[in-house]
Length: 105
Image (tube, rainbow, N blue to C red; front, side):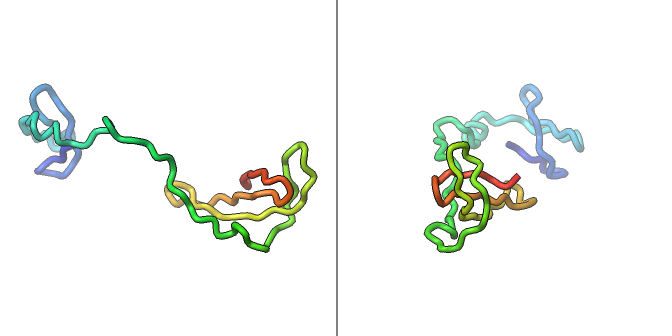
């Protein structure tokens, strides 16, 4: 990714040059510098980061009926997790009886 020296906008490739769509500035492409730019080649996906469950092993439960078809439990632990982007949180439940997990929709 290259940014324009004139206006700071992100530039795109146009043949042998980098071109800015905002101010029409152009800069020559440098194959050595482009090879050093970050790529996803060789990267690994470790999955989502681990989030500490503050309610694990907690004695507090809430009255929430388990939606699992083979369980008639009515108590669950809950935890709040932020949604990506931080717009709001999601409440996750775990049934005390069967361990089934679901989220508040």
